[in-house]
Amino acid sequence: MKAEILKGAPASAALLEQMKRRPEGDRPLKLALIGTEGDPSLGSYAKSIRKMAEEVCVDFQFRLFPEDVSEETFLEAVRSANEDPETDGVLLSMPLPKRFSFEKIQTVMKPEKDVDGISLVNRALLYEGLPCQYPCTAEAVFAFLEYYKIRLSGKRAVVVGRSPVVGRPVAMGLLARDATVTVCHTKTKKLHEITREADVLITATGCPGLIRKKHVKPGAVVIDLGMAAGENGKIVGDVDVKGVSEVASKIAPSIGGVGVLTTAILLEHTLNGAERMKK
Image (tube, rainbow, N blue to C red; front, top):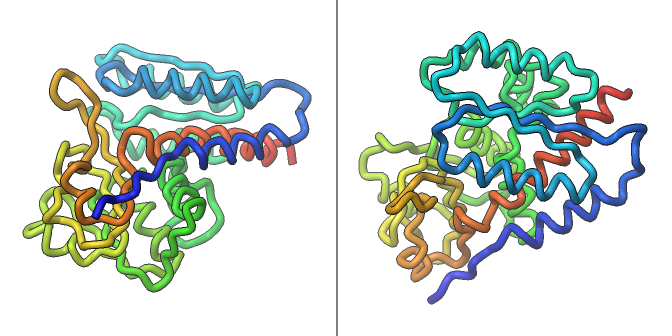
């Protein structure tokens, strides 16, 4: 058995075509990314956003601070982007430095411009199951599964990862789509015994090679959202694709999978935010 490798590019292209058909506004839209040095994947991520943004006429601004930037300086940059009438969406690079207060940043982030759903307002709405700005990666997972016609209702789903911007909202989205959901993490004992029960296995830990052949139920769908620096600084995912492909039916790898669609979702959120503010 050899798993089918699912790519994000076709789903992303379809979404971009929809955005291109929207009527043009009075001015180009603007998306601001604010981050700190130290994340090896941030440069390539910003590059991919800029390239895709040009396709849908979104002005992309990237502000990068030194790793030792003060929390107040960083917060002031977020406030400035929030208050700029020309900025339609604000994105923060995750994870933030550990010395920063995530709760404080959530409070500062303006919900209308919060394209990644991290503000307290958007998170509260999400956990109440009410309409909100959904985190980009989580929404991309469901757009990806829908594009490939993978049903979730009645399925057993396991999420490995509990971050507030990926693992938890993915779990909430699975519940909303009538899957039976178990959330695990890197401290879960006998992880493989739980993950082998999954019809749909979604992992987002940033631990290279965590998910191997023994972790996967035969015929399962595996979605890898993890990213970390592996050997020689190369970005790798959570899943050992070579081994897992011997048992899974479908795999969305970390590189070239859902992440490509995440960028398109991010731009769609920027467009949606501009429309909401206009109304």
